[in-house]
Length: 450
Image (tube, rainbow, N blue to C red):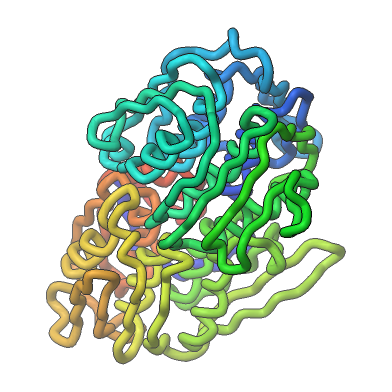
């Protein structure tokens, strides 16, 4: 699908969609309980539908409902921790890497083979370190060089393993499954490399809410080092049902916020909690450093953030190790900023849906190919950009075609960039449907033409 975007000021008051990361964690944990959970205000997107399919494949019963009066979605999940006979033998994770890795570890709890498949992008994601760790815990695994098709078969026997984590999803997957291993099982994990630490903080918050986190004197629960370099997890635990609403998604909020500051407009965003564990909330600190106005207000227990820009964006140095998903939108902001912007310490952005470092460099060169002062160079772990400034006259004009590469974050970042181009510019983005992976309704919000 092609999207045609003509520059215009983005002035919107919006409720941010629910968090994909929270939704998938709640779904998987609910699927592994022995009770009934009610997940209120979940994200309804392509990725979360893949997670629902995976949870159903391991025997969970899920009813999806929409309350027309409250305009809220409610998912009722009846877990399947004990009824192993209901498990299917094949799970299609679609495009969702989080679903793929989390469900692989969950499948290791069942004593029958389960094979995982997915789409073309998931076929390029290696689960190698996670599979090696599971094999070290006694689980039978087979794969195509660490990639799908992957087959996993328990039982989980425990032991001590080493798990390097270029993506935090490996460790979150193991942490969510290990407490449910057979009683008497002990899983010890050494973590010599860990990117995206805030996602581990999020996962541990769920385990703490289940009463499973202890200290070194309590061997019946989970203990860890403060820097997350070591975990000891006792098996034989159970999850209780989850019955809370899903908070707004900071990873999605960055796009309307960026659309406002790039186009000279204003965004008023609600549904976000600045105290949430999501790492991408730091984006609002980043744009403040770049010269944007960011104001948080607590309105009747509902936070609201207002974002605008009165002065040109200015460059800076940003360490994105914790938040590599910000690479696409931060690259766009750097391209429009005055001076140099350095995005660093995010080599793991190359192993997402696409190589986001290489893709953003290539697409931004298309966008600003005729602007003499624009520079965009790749580093092994990031980008160095010499921006064009935020005055429209400094940017390119005419008709420009960009390729979203089927990557939802690249596609949405390109759309935000299009809004900041000079009047008369027409930007065509291919693969526009990818936005539905995490942000249904994105194109209606942007007011594009098809």
